[in-house]
Image (cartoon, rainbow, N blue to C red):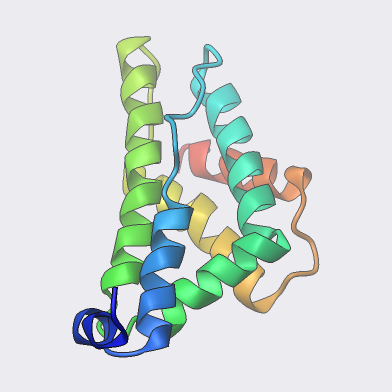
Length: 140
């Protein structure tokens, strides 16, 4: 592929890196079914936090957002998380469990983790991830 082809498609190197990062952030499989909503969300949140807060995860997030002037890649990353959460919630419904809506899980689990990864990396551990899940599953 010639440099002119790359620049016609992506405009600049940062946009190319952004698209590559988004593909690297795509989950490869659905979350494992561990038998209960709580168990699956705990495991998913712990894994998400571990992967995204790692040095490569932070670099992928940074690259995905830096070359994304119109927000398309950020929206795609959000869609990946939403698809994973929808899969977990749909399985729980089939088991007869009461479930929150996906937006509640995104707002109470994913959003605080991403904010912490980007701006407040102090306490990003499995206990924190489980606390966020507890908050999302609490009845309001």
